[in-house]
Length: 314
Picture 1: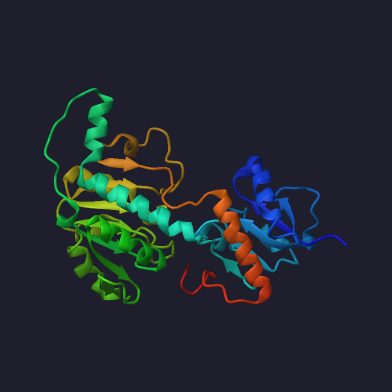
Picture 2 (picture 1 turned 180 degrees about the horizontal axis):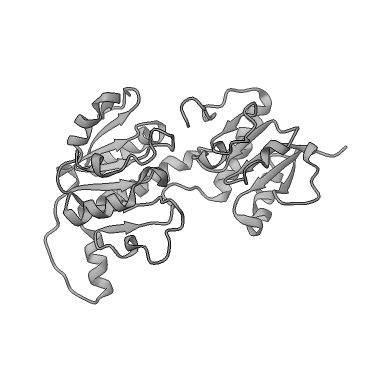
């Protein structure tokens, strides 16, 4: 009897052999097949592990029991108007995600504090551009916009570097050493942020949130780290705030669209560091371990803490 199928769409066809090899051991009860394999009968597909499936494709899999995102964000899956709403959608949050994001945020925040972008430009021009460092971590209050599970996990790493960490989220959180703001307290939160770190999920409420009106509520010369989702960033407003000095510098890891178009002025802005959406992505091996754990937990009927909630949008 043919085994049920797990369809995988991540990393392109070139990366599929690695996915199949990594999943064969922990999931022998499933046949792991590539997303575009023409030999797969739709009625055999029990699970799908995907990042950006074409709209309508998942709805054409009649035996589909669950969909697993291969990253923490699943907006490219949930945004499909034909998505079969009766099928659970599970976000992939590997234990390594928090460590990697914490490392990224520490690097990005310290790069801004130490004016690393200016030094990188000077090196590219072979110029010895000596200047005093603008400050040290304890001089900066760092606000995490989106104090969810990931933000709570990263906060101790930022505190260990020396930053005073505060946070904002829909509901008040209890995080050791972190003052928590919620809902209508956003203006009071922003007024304290010398460094603003965005870790918000992609929802209709957060779309375009990082805009001129929000930047105006930050202290003049505040620093920005955007590691949430590209849909939240009004990039022309970021560039204008950098030009005016309202923002003193920024590190952006997410964009819309990705990659950033050739010739875009953000590529060469002297106060802006760009990274190619690498803030917290675990290795394929790490993601395969977590994917297998999630599928096995689902088959046992265990509750999945990273189940997507359509009402919340994450």
